[in-house]
Length: 304
Ligand code: NAI
Image (cartoon, rainbow, N blue to C red; front, side, top):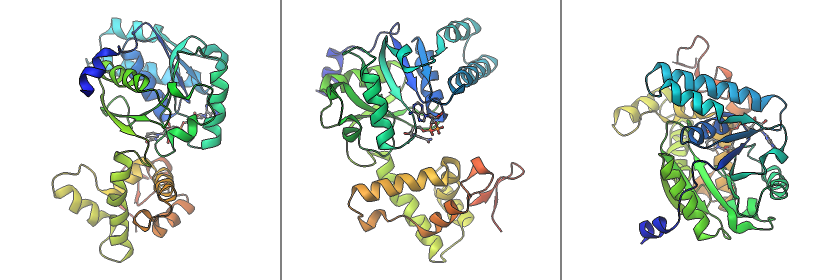
């Protein structure tokens, strides 16, 4: 039934403009996916110069795809010609879909969408890439919350197929369906879900991190041993410690904290003190050269 409903609502036509707001890690990846799917793409970031940097970074990534033989040069040139930085939110007026990937703070996201709603048309779909905030809360102050949906991509967005299409309390089912079929048209593997804390993946993954941290905190084994055990058991490409070093200890802890708060501090989701100390010390993982492991010379080795 879900599949036939999906067929009744068309994907966004490739000639419609997609805007991406917030052009950091996720925004760049999402923009690249929309671009390769054929859309004209506009990038906006509130940090001066950041959107232009993102245009250059995405261009370089498309060049690498050409070098690897995964994109032909003509397609790269066409894609690059469809990508533009916007100087202000007003330049996003003709977007049919806006995907937001800014800082993970509810009031900042709410303000952004309140501003965007004054700029875009009533038919424009507004989407958030939030990993842990309530889609319903972000849309709470909107004039037309029915056109609001969660589009939760995973990092790196061009490589990982999954997109959680999250319906908030007020999301129009046709909007969610349009978002879902558009993700299919972009070559993604969308799944639909309701707006529960952590959605599907981030919630189910919480105990994976939490129990590994507890084994460590109880002196059960060190991070390298726990990672190795989980890698060797078959199903996990990375252990929880190396994976959170990749994600960023601050980001991972914030998601845990957010899910814990949302479930009224359910002990099952209690954040780890050991991880708190790591974040406080600035050892955030690969991005700072140090987390559970040291990446000083590009080599991964257990901390002393
Ligand atoms: P990031 O820090 O790399 O990029 C955020 C960008 O947003 C920055 O360039 C910043 O200048 C810009 N920005 C901040 N406030 C803004 C505003 N009011 N208006 C316009 N631009 C603004 O962050 P990242 O990692 O790309 O995360 C973005 C969002 O995606 C967050 O909601 C995060 O929870 C979510 N997310 C992150 C994932 C990850 O693995 N990093 C995975 C899935 C979702």
